[in-house]
Length: 195
Ligand SMILES: [Fe+2]
Ligand SMILES: [Fe+2]
Image (cartoon, rainbow, N blue to C red; front, side, top):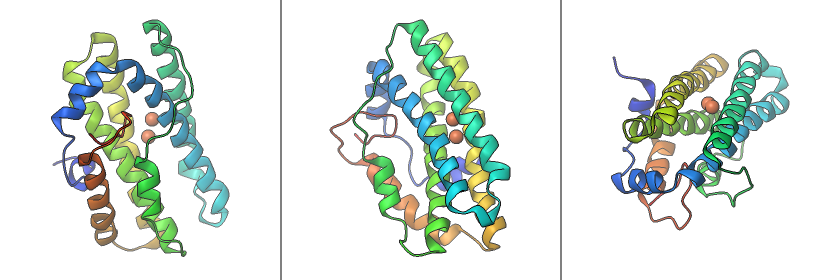
């Protein structure tokens, strides 16, 4: 059986991005640290915004796990001599969130899908990078890969349990926007950037 992340992404990461990433490990890791921190922030803000859906049950542990990932990336960066700093954000997440409906309940449905797609693309990029990485990063990314694959499923499960309906039609619309973004020219290299 194939993994969910493979089935919901509309296209693989282009080789050119992988090559760029291997040449830009410092920026990749700094931005990756920010991604983990943002993943925790997103989960907490969903718990806050939709208290009536009991999202805390699954998203509070997820937020804690993402913060652990954040700390782990910081430790690896420290070992490699890379300094944590703020970076200008890429347009990936904004592009996906801009594609969400502004009206409820569609907005939360779309948000679950966007969160799942971001987790899926993270998995796919870890998977593509792992064979080319130095041993320390290879082991670390292999562990993260498993966690983010689980998160990809978790967000789609939240959609199903919250709304008791199929997500596939809305997913294919947003997945096409996601795929278009990662295949387009992008001046800023980031973990989720285009080319
Ligand atoms: Fe994570
Ligand atoms: Fe995650």
